Image 1 (cartoon, rainbow, N blue to C red):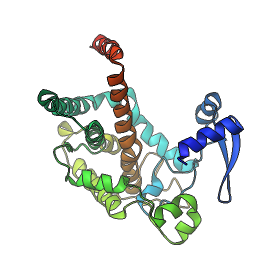
Image 2 (cartoon, one colour):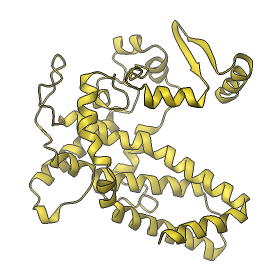
Image 3 (tube, rainbow, N blue to C red):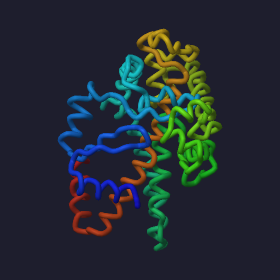
Length: 292
């Protein structure tokens, strides 16, 4: 049975709150929107921790998304959060707009020739391009450059299979840690680690008038310490307002993990439902035109 069907059946049978087991771990399943809002927002300080799956020995251990809600998590969140203010995001809109124009031009070729298009593939390329530009300041144009190193390594990193390493890392993390398993492609992660360090080095030598506005640059401006190595026994050993090289790599990779599939899948569904409800297309067009 598919997991979503299992969840729906369990909800109908047990209600909005019920307990479950994952091996020896107890799980509380919450199926109430108001309660979820309290857990994720209002009472987040009480429920800050996520499931501690095994992330191996790679920089992924320093990824904000997977860290436990301790002082180290708070420090990284305080450093990273200012990069997502409306003002900072607005500075990246020129890059996103250019990628969107290229996306439309590519689709226009299919429309003029009356060809069928794999929209998920193109939205995936769009998401890949936006993430590459906003995180690393690199214009990939992945739909025309599928063998670009960023594209190849991102896909290798994001591909999840039913290997023993992945199964143990998710279901039995202590055993995976004992065996020193890596759930994601280590070579791909090493590529992004080297890429991040290379960009940081180049940016520090770049004149201010030639700055590229992206996530890495915002972190550099926030005094990234590219030579620091965090001491696991002292979360403040590098200073409260600095990211270590590993932490910076991890947050860059987080863009792909959190943004690639979610963006491409959401946009694909939106386009599909619009195609099935043509009357809504005009409403959407009018709303978008009103924003100009």
